[in-house]
Image (cartoon, rainbow, N blue to C red; front, side, top):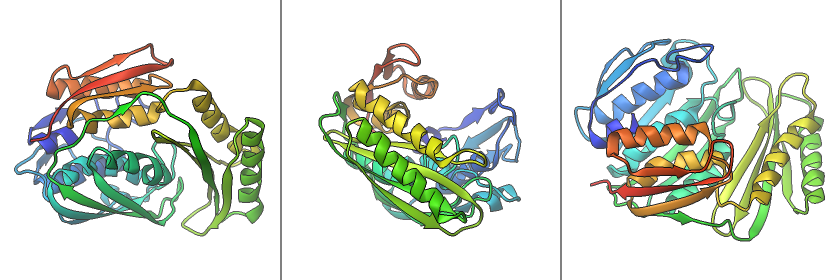
Length: 334
C-alpha cells in the first residue's frame, strides 16, 4: 500500500493473511488500508473486517495534513491493533509529500507481533532521519493487548525527497544500553523485578545498562521490558511482553537474551530493523547495504514485494534464520 501511494499505482491484494488462524483484514490492517486511501484519495474495494482481498487505486499524490485514525473505531469494535503498523503504511507517503503532517493514531502501542512504539521512537525514526526522513513520535498513552487504548502523535516533516542511501556494515562500539520496564494497572513490584533482572543479566553478559521501572495507568493491564542498545553506527531495540502466569524474571530474560545474541553476532542491524529499512532504501538514491544478524521471512517477503513494483533492486544474501546481508539499488523517489 505504501508503494501504491508513493507511486500512484493501483494495487490489488488477494489471499490476505490466508495462512493465519484469523485470515483476512484484521483491525490494524483495515485501519492501514483506509489510512493509505485517505492520504492519496484512493478508491477502495473490499475494505471490510475479515476481507480476504481488497483493491486500492490512488487518485492523487499523497497529501500532507492533519490525520487521525483509531483502530478500534475503524474496526467497529474494541481493539489493541498496532498503531505502529498503521504508521508504517503512512510514513513514507507523507515524508515524501510537500508540507508537514501531524498524525494521531489510537490503539495498541506495545502489542505482540508488531514493533513497539518505543522502538519506532528510539530506533527506527532516528535511523530513517539519516536518509532524509524527518519524523518524531511521542507516546501520549501506552496501550497493551488486549485492551489497547493507547495513543501516539507523529510529526512528519514532508520534504518531497530525495532520500539518501545508507551503508550499515558493522555496528561499531556499544555506546550505551537503556530501557524501560513498564507495568500498567499492576503492582509496582512487577516493573521493579523486570528492571532488576535485566540489570543483572546484562551485567553478567558484560554490559552495563540503565533500566527504569515505570508504573503506568491505562485501559487495561499489561507489562513489558523495552531495551535500546545504542551503537556507533545505529541503535537496535529488543523487547518482551508479559502475560498472565509468566514471571517478570522470564520476561526480562527474553529481552536480554535477544540483546546479547545480537551484540555477540557482530552485525549492524537485527532482523526486524533489516526488513523495515528495505522500502525507504529502495526509494533512496544510490546503493545501500546492511549486514543483519538474521535473515527473516519478513525480510525475504518484503524484498519480493519491493521487486514486484520496482524491478530487481533488492538482493538478499544468506539463509533464512542465519546472518546475512541485503543490498538495495535505490531508484529515487521523483
